[in-house]
Length: 119
Image (cartoon, rainbow, N blue to C red; front, side):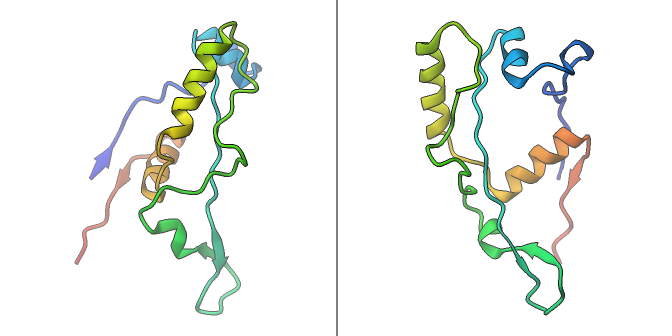
């Protein structure tokens, strides 16, 4: 399976030195952020290298890295009620799985993802 989409999150030349909150304001939207944990572990084969912990790739949404979930503290909008409502909706939205994260990273970095054929 190949996925290719246009990435609208790449900053324009004018946006390069703007904060994320300023970029969102410029686009007439709200800046809501979240972070996720990607768990690593030492290779089970005894090799001193990091590999993904199986809980990272179990098909479930990744764990939030923020104590209180999604936040909008850096949003520069004027409508705080609307911003808080959007933050609350995003806080209830499922966080990406490892597979989802793979596609998000590929899109942001300009890669195309192709799933290997399973034997």
